Structures are given as structure tokens and as C-alpha cells.
Length: 287
Ligand code: 13P
Image (tube, rainbow, N blue to C red):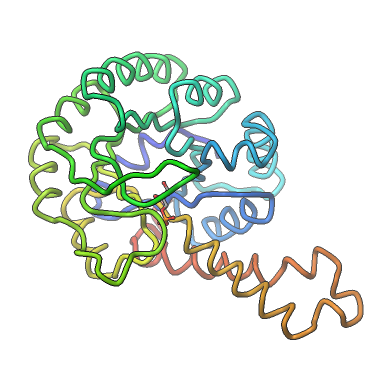
């Protein structure tokens, strides 16, 4: 069932758990995430970055694939198809393509411009029943060529953006995309608590879910985080399982080179990672 993320995140915030956003890259990824969410009776968000959208030939292809797959696989849990770190233009493209949710990442604009563009996009998204995420304080690390310094968000700016009527808010709290460096200082719970205090019941989003220790995840959820984004961890699991298959020479045994066989261990590894995260985030049996 393709839905906006609004209801599932409201429920998650009230129920003190988080819904996972798992970024997708291709058909295998999408299938693995959807089947795991269904098996665990968990709501789920499929994240699509602009780079991944381009790789999959365009947002229209992605939306058509996800909608058809939900039907063909008989997926009954709530699924949101969400643009991840969208540009202003990218948001309009996804609204047109039939996504059910968008993120406008205006964190690199001066706050006045972030407010102005977010206001307009909230209107455009809500008119068609899509949910919208905004961002304040950039997330560290590199994603699709966008490099963030991992600054902590200003709680007053968070309130300003939250008041525009967004459905979820990503606030930088020292989180980073990709693997965390050994000298990472950890999440700033001080910032998170201050943001949470300002924004009331707004579901907060934790980006950079890969490699955050379980205790920090649990604490973040207790402070209002209702959506956690995971991308790199599925890529690492997929790559490791694929490497193992090839290094064991299995692609050279029988018809082991058949893509349905070659990509199967990687797909199973994505499922295992998604399963582990859904358990940790507490969203199993919440569909
Ligand atoms: P990771 O790649 O660190 O899991 O972050 C994902 C993310 O935040 C997508 O927006």
C-alpha cells in the first residue's frame, strides 16, 4: 500500500519507535526491502536520492516500479516512496512522478531562503497528499557529491521550519552519512533534546543510520526521533556477500553466473540488515 509518511510517523512518535527509511538502488534492493517489511509487518519508507533516481533512469521509472512491485508482491504494509535530500527542482519532479513523500534539503541555503522554499513546497506537496521532510543543520559526510560538515542544528531555526507545516524534520545532531570515523564524538543528545523541546510533537528524522550504536539509537527514539535513514549499511552487506560468492568461485560453477544466482546472496544480505534494523527501531508488527 503506497501511502504518505505522515500517519506512520505520527504513530511511531506516539508509540516511541522509529520507521526505517531504506535507500534503494535497483530492483533487487527494492524487492529485498519490501519483502522484509511485509514479513515483519512493519511500515517502511523507500528512500531515493537524486543520484539513485538518475541511475534507475528517472523518478518516473522508480515510481512505476515501486507501485507495480507493491501490487505484484502483494505488499500490505504501509510503504512510502520518499525523495531523499531533494533539491527544489527534484521535489517537483518527484511530485509529478507519483512519489508519496519528498524531502526538501534546504539546509545549505541561508535560513530565510530555506523557509521560503520549504513553505512553497509544503503547499505543493500537501495539495496532492504527499508528506514532506525539511532539514536544518547539515548532516556530515558525503552523499551524491553533497558534502555536509555535520553541524548541529539551531533549535530556534528548527522551530521556524517545523512551524511551516512539514511532516517530519531532519535536524543535524552530529550525525554523518557513511561510516563513522573512529574519532566521531557521537550524537549530540543535548541538541536533540533542545530541538525536541522546541518542536512539540514533530517526528524527527535521524540521517546517517549506518553504524550508530544501538544504545544511541534507543536514546534518540526516546527524544522524538521517529524515522531513521539507512543507506550505506545495506550497500556494505550487499558488497560483502557478493564478494564472498565470487571469491568462492561460485559464479563459475554450473550456472552460477546467472544474475538471478549471482545477485541472490547480496539480496539476502540486504534483507538481513533490514531485518536487524527493523528490530532495533521497534517497528515490527506496527503495520
Ligand atoms: P547512511 O548511508 O549513513 O546510512 O545514511 C543514510 C541517510 O541518511 C540517507 O539520507
